[in-house]
Picture 1 (tube, rainbow, N blue to C red):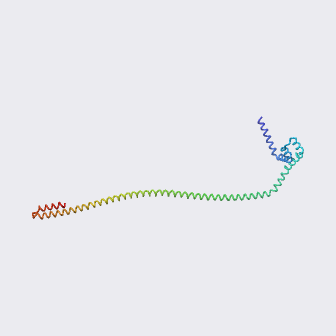
Picture 2 (cartoon, rainbow, N blue to C red):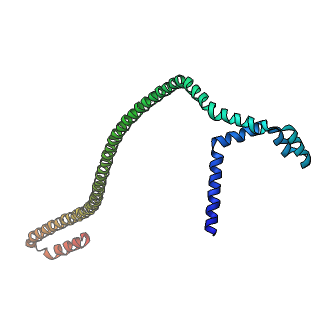
Picture 3 (cartoon, one colour):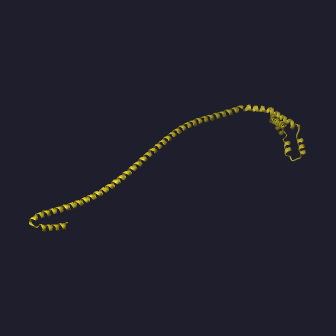
Length: 243
């Protein structure tokens, strides 16, 4: 029951919509409103009571305004107006064609410009890609050169540190050798000094030996004269004094 009621309401609404969308019905409604606009305004906007409104509408309306004139208007709108529109369309056909030709020519120029712009953009993109590829290769080459330079710099730094260590070791050895040379020099000076002292002592001993030899020779010479005891005592005294 409910479903059949829904279908009935739905079909009624659809039929009413078709009637309203019908050009004949729409033309009749517009024509009727055009010929009876005073009665419509008085009906909806007047402050009079309903009896006065009915009286005013009855006095200012007739079968002509209610039916004849709207029907004639509908016949004109539905029968003559399409032919008028057709005549106007035919009369406007050539200017419209010219306008279409102008628009098409303008669109063709616009499409041609767009095509040229796209070609230029494509060339620009290709050139940009080539430049970008070349720049990337250059950047990669520079990175490789920087990496090689850094590696070479590391090698030079290591070699520099090695040479610095060798120089430090050589300097330490040279300082040690200089210290040893100074020590050897001091030791040589002391040895030379001791040798000179020994030489002086040897010369003194040599002189003493020579004196003793002279004394012995003198003693041997004087022994023949019998003065050995006295000479020996004198020589002993001299030796003790010089001793």
